[in-house]
Image 1 (spheres, rainbow, N blue to C red):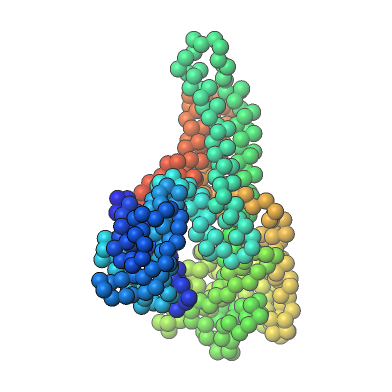
Image 2: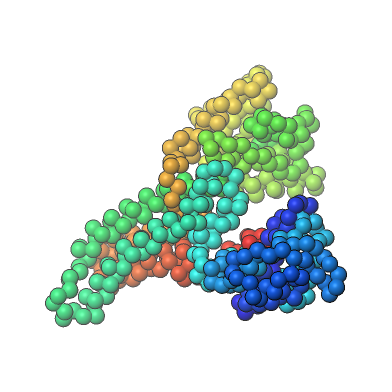
Length: 450
């Protein structure tokens, strides 16, 4: 991190202002070469200065330059922010001059990555920055703020601190058995502490799973054969003509998406191409995309027609989705019945999308499946991303293994191994331990200027 990085921090396009951010040991000197105004190397930290960006003798733009000196900055390095007029050509020209004078174009998320590596934030707070930028609901925004201000990080640190006395006492017992003034720990004496810790971890995982839904929403895939009413259902839920609806089979050749709020939770609804055997190359690609969407969705809405008999393809799809959360919806109940209901599960929803009946039943079933009425949105001080929740579950597994070792009368040093692993795994959540591959993957999701 010896070099100085630069990137445009605002959306590139026509606007009143663009902000270009520079961070690194040479950031003030580089900007000062181009700045006509005060000598930026001599101004106080956290001050704003009016002047012009000059290319040799040619004036490029009229700007305001903010100087923020290390360590009281986002990256804990010297940072300069140039506020220029928000035009594409002007912004790119200023960026080009900064690169020509010694700065390097930042990689996606590199400013936030430097903030982490320099100890300004931890990995939970880094995730929260991206989540805050992408927040689409008030609950998601509040959740990100709680993670950003350190409340969630402190919860993980407290969990780790709860394990330290157990680990320390076990090690003292093993290494210094002759000491008489230390507490003698046995498997049975630490078992209640581990059971209490396990219960606390289970509650945090439950709350975090709820928060994941609040933060990311629920991905809902509408599937079925061609012409069963998938696009009509999407349009009905969105209350707009998002997807093309015709009587011609195979009209939807690609995925169509839309979003609605249900009980304050975002539903990402995906209308897929009708699933059937076809020789049409374009339609075949659409069918493949539909099958891939099934694997990634949190909820499958499978539509059947009341006026059509079940086919072997229908049976195969029913088998394919039975291990996932799903709702079977029978459409076109306004038409004569030809569907054999005995071959379907009991908890189907009957509806006529044409007559706008059954929509509320569908929404209520989604609320029931994901316990949306019971998701507590008052206390949002929990984790919300898949990586962190997976590590929480891994830590829980370590604690469960240690409890099992106690039941099996394993030596206390064997029990300690699992407790230590749980402690280390919790450390991965906040970034006490990490790999370069993890950081590259995490920060690559950010935009260039963040």
